Length: 590
Image (tube, rainbow, N blue to C red):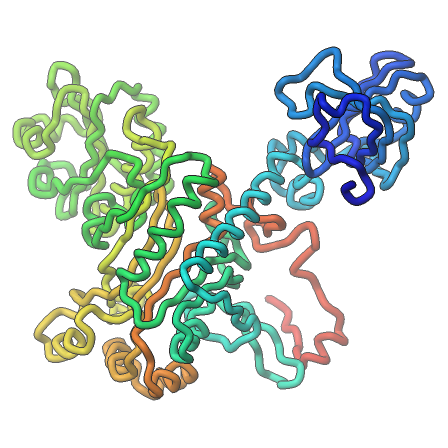
């Protein structure tokens, strides 16, 4: 017996015919055929079962119950005359003898049809998320998430990692995004912060002598939402390894992730080890992105030399990038719409021309390209019916637009994307430093705690002017799958002297490092092991596995795009008494 029932609504089969049973669930639908015949669909977590009322009294009983009420049905299982082969329970039905209302739905009209909730307005779905989750299609994503998290835990434990939880209330730390601050009642004027990531704690665990750590870690960042990022909070498979190199981290990820993607993913193909490794600068040149989707066969070529002086104004004095799409037979309407979409995403206008079936250059900026046709055809290796999309601008802008062209055209033009697979790659050799757009001075490019390639020697050479600081790479890496960044990781800078020198390059001294990161700096002075780690995003991982475009589809209770929980009405106002206890005064926004 299961709880207060003999069977669940997805369990009964033809072999159960003749059994007296008790099933419970939500009354999904009632179809009244006549005064003495009605068909009822009862749904629970496990599935649906058809109940058939064959007396006027029983029909009236069901008619009096509002949809989505929870009920108990006791009766006898029998074989259905009209079977539904699409349902696991489609060969049987239950003839009810007793019906009891367990929880009445007090609304005659629902905000949306449960089984079609995904077609409803998102704001309405989030407001009534408890109804949305009753939809089996929505619920299945949450079940998938549970199974994936369990599989990750099992795999990490099998690889010798210990699951250790780290603090949620901690100190504010400059890690790139805005902190969520928590006022400390017993310490007026001071605040805790919710961790943007367990970064410092997991490195401290390595200095404490733990060899392999992992955690399904909650992270909190006050940042804007987008399709693959949820505002407020998210979860990651956080891991760190002592006495480890980049190769050790890669080996674990390449062993843990592909079987999980192959087993639980929408597609049953996933990259096997070793994953493709692409240096950052090569990725930007070849794919126009540090998050390339390797399911697409299109790449970027630099045509500045051949097209920079063709007389077309936007190309003059700029870098020019080209994306060649072979066997192209789309309409002018398709071209205009697709390139308009690219301009919206990239912020820069793309251009085009094509080589027709006769080998002539036509369309777009053809009048500027036709006079140098031979050079262009040779440079790009063009054939009849090739389409060429172009971007122009400063290097970064030209690369960005070209990258959007690759992704957009690759997905839209048939034959250029092998969609049904999970294609992993590592992006490696990230720059350690960059010139800040606002400051115009040297700044950290990504993670300031990454070990610079070459260690202290590279930093000293840059300090002496022997090499350009911008040429220093970091032992840092990103894991990318199907064009989505799953994770960033790095070999950590565990040496206090190298750390100080790395920060000196961006005009921060030893005292600044001690003040901003006191625990980690002090811990490293007591003998720290070389260590490395990574933290693949659980939410993004499940989003890919489920084949969803929005991360909100795989989170049980997501916030909306404005970081609001419309179901719980959060964030919300608090009482003056609460503010007084926390020594907080609200200042009106002008």
